[in-house]
Length: 400
Image (cartoon, rainbow, N blue to C red):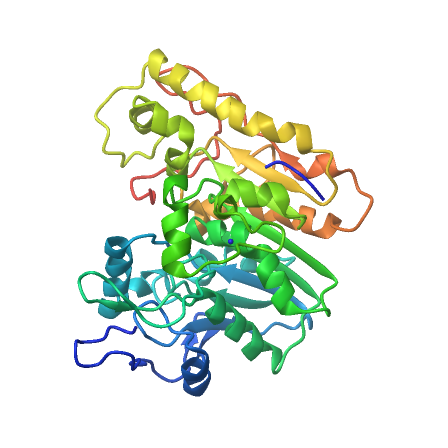
């Protein structure tokens, strides 16, 4: 279907031998931490960017064959400096800030507490490759500093799926992600679907606040070369499909887009070309903990309105497409999905994200009215407080 718009830290004396640092299985909320087997990792070379052993989190549900996959967040890296920073975070344990130990269950797989998904099997795949699960570079990469790194995201994903297939079957699978995890979900959905095999009867994607790429298009070529990406997905081998919006436009997989008027819109071309845009957003829409000292003015509001209206209005032309849907909100808290109160109470067009996505998921493959799976934002008001949505999660500790 076509519509609009996927090292070890070696010292100088230890070159290609990966140090695998991990502990035994242990519980994380209602999930269990699982490391890939050392022999499998060594044989396939499927190491994290710094040479550690990849891991995922598994929650076994009562509904056999029904699964929720969730890709962990963090943006991709496309040059030596950025990748070295990510590898160093992994070395220092800072990369685990995206792990379950740091947030509660709903914060990492937010839809798992929804009544329609609470009995699903669930897998949270931690992002330790920083390559959208696409990297497939042969050998160990040596940066100009001498740092050794691996770019093996595609192998990591393949081995995690293979590990799960040893004891489980997949029939209905919903792939999700938020922020950088949504970037990965939009780009890599087809790849995961193909890995899961012919037993699938239903597959879809829900991406939260990840429609705008964390990586500028000017860096796509460097990213592909560094990470060893030869093809993005079966539907698009061109590197332009590293942009979630482009990947979304060519893949025929049922998708539910969730996008707030949050900080991720600063990755848009509009924001890049308008120096007044981000200051206007900070003053008029951001959380109370915003660093902005400006008072929202009518001029600022008029800077925001054209972008927002054009963005979400572009989707109205596609609301007739079967098995697709979306929710667009003027609320501005990027990480609302990992805050219980926000995810369960923030509404757009009369629905929470959980309820809207569940309704869309249930409608896939049916003859229901596809237009009912789209949830549109309210119209921004005037300065000094243009926010038109009364249920937005806003407090002094609102995550950016």
